[in-house]
Every structure is written in structure tokens, then in C-alpha cells.
Image (cartoon, rainbow, N blue to C red; front, side):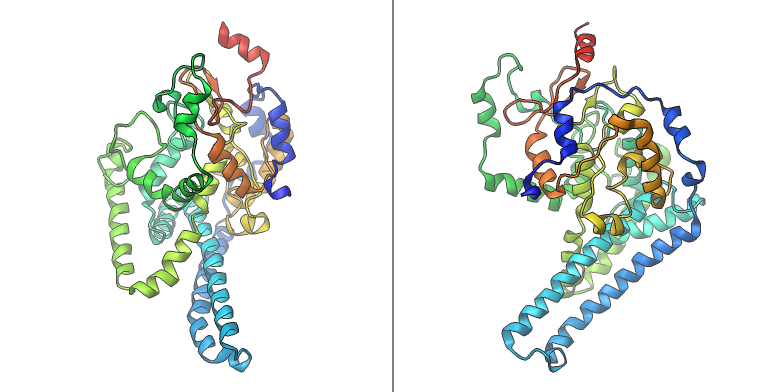
Length: 409
């Protein structure tokens, strides 16, 4: 089944030794028409109103499910089991689509944080703050580290998100002396345990990252988090805005606490967990067995930006509800101030320049998630251009001969 197979683009990368891109930033920037980089306030507002309308419409739909079931759906469904089946099917429909819309609201808040919805900074921050606070996201805190991520994508020293674990962090012997038994002792686990860890990452990984900086930059001490205004993540001039993020979360939590447990679970908590595609797509953008990470001797902004992957996450639904965030992520890294609705056109423009250095993967995103989770285990402590290794200590991709020679020299 294709659902459990690698996409042809991924297979092609496996067969091709890696060499860094030779294209220049000027060539990429020259290929993109400048009007695509400017936000259209009316278009931005239309997307914002669209998602708010979807949220309210779906809420009203959910409010009607119980009255409909009590009336036997207008007298058309009278058999008890059929009525219950239809009732729960409608609830699942609400949870699924409200989760998609909520993930879309996150994407709009993300774009506001980049200043790509409007040309007015205060308006962008107001919109982003409201949207992210509604989703229990500390807007200014996450905005700060996310900007740092864009400045240092795939840098082992300075990236802020999904920084690989090192061989030494697992207390493994060196690559030359490690044997099969050493890897088995640490990484061998049952499929059930693997899926449980994957469930924890998808369901709670976002909060673990915010609270503990899990898989964040290794330059910060233990206890670093996104809620402390005096965290080393932030500069002195950002302390007040970090506090504002915390106040927003407290207010939102107080509102939710007054909703009642059943209402809260049905209308907010379950859709909330259905919206955590943000963990999935951010993980898949930068965690792939065929994508390199760089140490400072070899890292550059261009190399980091190309070390990400475009994916057709959830097909048309992902493009529609997630505002192109997965389909056009490479373009986003090159042009972080370009509005998302111009992403498809920008992608086509840079593909013509990047050619073989443009990375796309048509692999089913759910299979790709499992593949990356189980194969992107650790990287070596040495080397300036490195790839993830799996639980057997084997990398899926190798450096080209010229790169190997430069490393040896």
C-alpha cells in the first residue's frame, strides 16, 4: 500500500550522495517577483474572518447535536443505536474540523508574528496575541524563539527547535567501537512502547518543549522555559512582552475553568488535541533522515533554509486549513515576511532556481511521521555536515566524495 511506502522523491534522495547547494541567495531572491512579498490587508483580513466564521459555525453546529438527537433528528432516526451512532459521528465531525480550524488559527497567529498579515506591527501583534492566547500559546514567548529558529535553521549550535540528540547523550561508545548490542540495549523497544512515545510527543510534546525546552537549543541550562520572563531565551527588552503572554494564558485558563468540565471537554479540550498538527508539521519540516544538520564551520542561512521539506500534509485539507504552512515551507524559510497566500507562487519560482536542491516528499505524512520518529534518533558529536542515524547507528544518507575529502582535510 502506498500509505506505508516512501515517496519517490524521498527514495531519490536516498540514492543521491549529499552535496550542499551551490545556488546563491541573490539568485533565489531575484527569481521571486517583489509584489509577492507584500501583504494585502484585505486578503489577510478575509482569511482571518473566514477562520473565525468557521470556528463559530462549528460551535453552533456542536450546540445543536444534542437537541437534534433528542428529537430523533426530526423523526428520521428512531432506532436507538442508529441515533447514538449518528450523534457520535456528528461529534467526531465537529472535533475533526474544529481541530483543523484551530490549527489554521495557529498558522495565522504564526504569520502575524512574522509580520506578514499586515504592514502595521502593532496590528499584527494584536491579532497574533489574541489568536495564540485563545489556543493557550504564549504568543510573544514563542514568537521570540521561533524567530531565532529562522535565523539559525539546522544549526547544531544555534537552532531553537528539534535540535538532534547527540551520540554522547545516550552514553554510547564511539562509532568505531560501538557494536550491535550497545544500540540494542538503549534503543530496542516494543512497537507498543514506540507508539506510546509517539503519542506523548504528538499530544504533549508542545507543552514539554515550552516548559522544559525539550529538543531546543543546547546552549541553555536545565530549567529553561518559555514562561519565565527572565529565562535566558529572552533579551531584557522582551521581558514585559513575555509577562503579557503569561497574563493572557492566566486569563484564558480562568475563562475555561468557568465553562464546566463536560462543556470544556466536548467543545474545547478534544478539538484542542485534534489541532496539534502543529507538533506534527513542525517536526516533519526539520526532522528527516535525508536532511542534513550543520555545525558552525559549514552552516549558512541558505544551507539551513534548504534543509527543510515541503509535504502535502492532509492533501487539500492541509493546504486549505493550514494556510500552506506544510506545502510551501521551504519558501517560508527563504521569505519569512512573505504572506502565506503567495506561498504557492513563491515555491514555483524558487523551485526553478534550486532544482535538485529543492526538497519535497509525497510520502504519506502519517507514515513519514513514524519514519522520522523511529529513524531520526541521534547524530554524531563530530562532523560539520551530519545526518540522523537510526537505532542501529546507521545513517540513511551519505556525503558526496568532495564533501568527505574536505572533512578529512
